[in-house]
Length: 547
Image: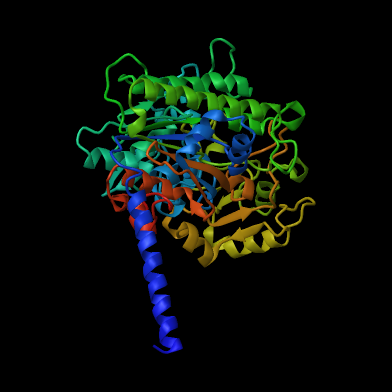
């Protein structure tokens, strides 16, 4: 055998050997996740990857650390383009970005919809859709939010209308989402499956049910902006008060593990897919640094509020895991810990609050009516979702991002020119002149978020410099909604007792990959999710259930 043939032979043998080793590893991994009966999904809003890494290294989140010992930790998980709560949660439960799910923000705009009062769909099209705390009937006519369950029904003044097959029909949140959810897929394809979820708004999160309207059997009706009778304030005033609200969610999960519904008053099957959102960390991050909120430096050293909030979340997880073990359910439960979104800026030195200069610039140039006189800002009572807002106005939604739905789409190029002429941070500039800032519009926006001509997608997305929040409020030093690094880089941990070799994966992943991972764990087909099929979303790597 000549030298070249010998080298080829040796290379082939090496390749075969490596393939054999890979096959053995795959075969071993195939036994890691099996006999899964349920999945528990926990969203700790604001949980950055750096928070998770720091607390586990410092032994300040021992329960999360224990989960990681039989889990896979992803260090490069990110949201798919926007980080508000709606697109953030939609990513986790649909496998899709705003392009397919159609959710850009809990307060957004749709050019095809009619006002709630327009029951014949004969007036102007274009409605400022508000699916938040005012979606519950307590808020009707601007009423006080006096019930934890939002009043027990939808606020009819919050529900727009659409022409569907020639019929003027109400558009509830579950009609508004454009794709199905994991809850629907599980109920459709698993016999006797039961599903549950608890979130921060009692009625705005009805979209989790998906287009069927029935995806979640036990959707806990908890409203974070409701008035706590004990304090006469809502649950967002201080993070320690938010703990009380999050404890409702912890108790709901404990009840469900114990074979009850979320209220603990009725017998119910232990859910096949269940979980909750926690807000304590998010509130602690937003609170001003001067009052103990946020972070102490660019290295994510937590301030006292954030440190305590992470400890609270870890303790809550410990209580849930202990109950699973007590009921002999832990060994058959996959636990996924992540977040809808992060928070920005964690480095307080980057914080810029010049007021809402973006909206002011648009109004000053007559692209929008002045003084916020558009959509649900233009109600007769001054309260959102009282049914008297203006239709056909366009709108702008700002936090640490700007989403612009133009009143007149033919003005887009003129608006772009105005924005580009005012990118600096000095008034009337929009503070989008740094390397992390951009204006997204035209073909690039269509490719990423869909076509504005179809009604739902903003005409322009403004990502300002990281650290910019379009507000002058002194109540918050951090926000979310955009695509700044601190908004989008999240903690993500998948844990299952069968995973005997803990590992960390630094490969970039998106939070959209959680949804197909949930279905694979339950031996269901990810492509049954419409967004997964449309966007080609894969399950998370490094697990036996990987595509």
